[in-house]
Length: 362
Image (tube, rainbow, N blue to C red; front, side):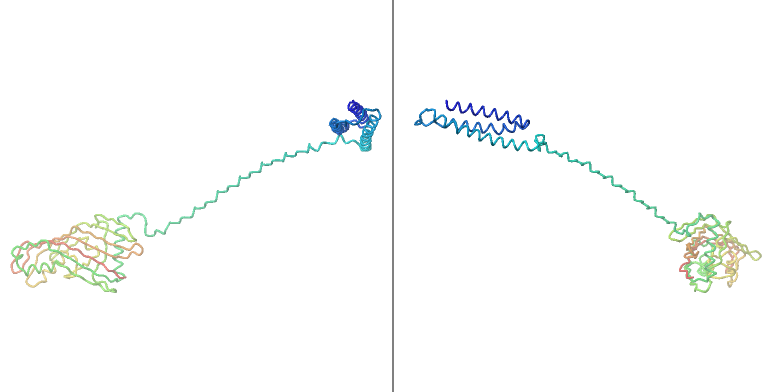
């Protein structure tokens, strides 16, 4: 019973306090009651746990003594609650205080991960490739003119040969003549006749050296278009090679007439009048003079012909100087009324000659 009374009184007091705090505080009611309820519960537990001593008699004075301290306790609690509420009245209730839990979560960190990806690096890989190096491989081709005509080839050939004579250049000459046929009847068997004929025709190999400063074993070249059957050239290593094939020629001689139409005699080989063993080509007039000047021999007339005449000249393209020259030809001779011990109405023979010039020193 005592417990029940205590609880009831406590509840009434709490209600009164709650009403009072509600009147004064208003919105702070929640906070006050929040503090008060736990203390009430604690005190009720303590009182429930305490067992009344069996020795204490259930008298009125005991009830009073016990109730008084209880009221003192409650009033004590009231003063504390009043004092706290009094303090709260002086201070403006900050119940509208923005709960700090709503900390402006500025976790909206401006995620400027839109980093200006200026990976648009101006790829100016348009490097001015001025590899247009002026390839001036236009080497002065003074040695490569237009295609030469037949007339130009002939002129260039003549000029190269004549430069040797005008410069009095040194050179070496070799002449080779081969007797192909001798027809002199009964005289053909005579050694003396054979030797004489061979001497007239220049059979065998002979070498001549022309010292620099002299001009002894060449003649002036004077070929004309009418003398040339064909003309060609090549250019290699700065050198022209001219190849001229000449027309066939003929010559005639007797006591009254001496004629010569032999293009080979205008090719530059050594030729002339009279009887000279150094002559490379002996025309009819040369043979007529040679036989009639031999003791005990004579000839009425001489006919001579040349064929297969070919001239090959190698000329330096830069200065026009002759470096090599080869003139080759075949020839044939017919003798009328040749007398040597006996008289032979018709005699004759044929031979081949090649004349080579080299080792020019200007």
